[in-house]
Image (tube, rainbow, N blue to C red; front, side):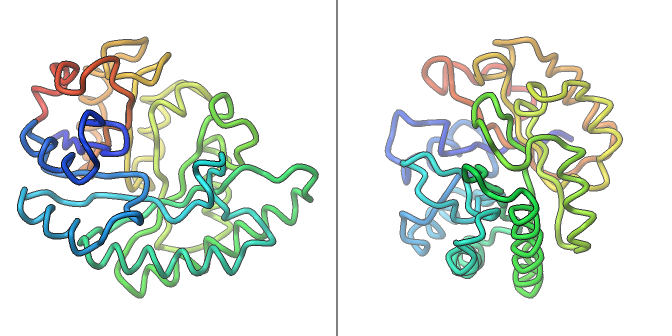
Amino acid sequence: MTRLCANLSMLFREVDFPDRLAAAARAGFKAVECHFPYDYDRELLAELLHEHGLTQALFNLPAGDWGAGERGIACHPDRIGEFQDGVGLAIEYARALGCSRVNCLAGIAPSGADPYLLRSTLLDNLGYAAGKLAEADIGLLLEPINTRDVPGFQVCRTRQAMEIMDAVKSDNLSLQYDIYHMQIMEGDLACTIGNLIDRIGHIQLADNPGRHEPGTGEINFRFLLAHIDSLGYEGWIGCEYSPAGETGAGLEWAGPYL
């Protein structure tokens, strides 16, 4: 059974962030995710989740200065302490919000950096995070991101992500598979998801091109969501897209799943 969750960093932006939880619940969502919850009081967010009967399905580890264009620091050799502090902060928020998974963004490779050092730093940071999160009963995810939208991103294909995960050798590290990013980078969505389903911990969606809601682009979501369901996937599928117009007006596609 397809279970959709609303990404509140991208949906319902017609209202302030705390009010998006109520908007998501009114639209029929049972779970939410977001990029980062850290600008908001975790007790307030926990109260709103409880009030509206919502599950916090996912958020990201702190990822540096997002407004300045940073997209993660896990591969940065000079920011290991900052990364480890971010893991601690994420655990505090995940515990307060009842969130069972957090995602790691590897980051954009610094210009001129030694690729071997970047990889070893990423492996060490993932191993550290996976261990600390396991102690708190929280799963860690690794997400490949397309390099058209984020040039230079350190992890950009599923095969690369799997090689990294194999090298980390942690039972607490799974793949976050974003349909939009992987349609751009490699296509062959149904086959890839089928091959990797046992190692996928979370899925996100948006259509391509444009990163808008399903039905606005080239991806056959009616087929793909049914295929994912047939594989026995029981996790959440995050609606991480930029609505082409007002959020509610573009949710007709989601009606059968809400």
